[in-house]
Length: 302
Image 1 (cartoon, rainbow, N blue to C red):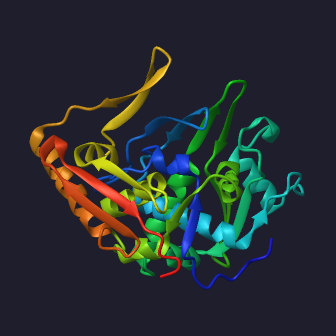
Image 2: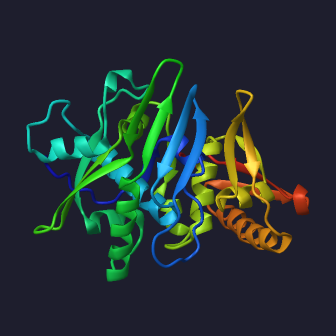
């Protein structure tokens, strides 16, 4: 597996369902292990269950976007029949990828060869010892995420990423699921990583909102978002379940003061994103009727 030298990763083509499903939420600073999480979502005719050993936040999202961006640049496909004992075989086995012809996402998984610094640079996390420690924890959490996908005929499962670390050379070999790989050539969300860096290095809620808006608003279109609903969604207080065969959203009860504080951060995030060149954001109303009108601008020829 050869290594492609990437000067700078400016964008990521990410699986849209992985951004719209609330698998990345704001996680307050907690010591030790985070809670487990299960998220149900339906997308393109398939029911998807995300199972996480620990909850994921904006740092894990930044790391995943960096990996996806590097994967698109390197273009390394994992061989369907790797040599026994090879790194490719280890990556494929960790992905828990079985019966690929049955999956609605049938492309082969991809892989990258990079360094800790390569991911830190692409994700905009900095180069400090603390940043590297956060990166290692984020990679572990991402490698423990499993998708279960059910369509009309089949139920299949696959892990989000796999990883082999060369401790001597401090090189990382990372495999990404066929779901993430499938998005490169099919339906995907374009995430502008330059914009993401402009929003700040540790701007949790702002990064989460930017990713969700990128997945929801196509270039040249406009959508409206209720600030209160978005505050609950980005903080993990909205879930989905099937009722009489239909998916419905379930909202957790939280006290009014806590909701007011959550909403305050989201309102600030909307306004900050509106300052970016590629976005136009206006707002109206207040309280439960506080709505943001969001347009994604085409600045390719500007």
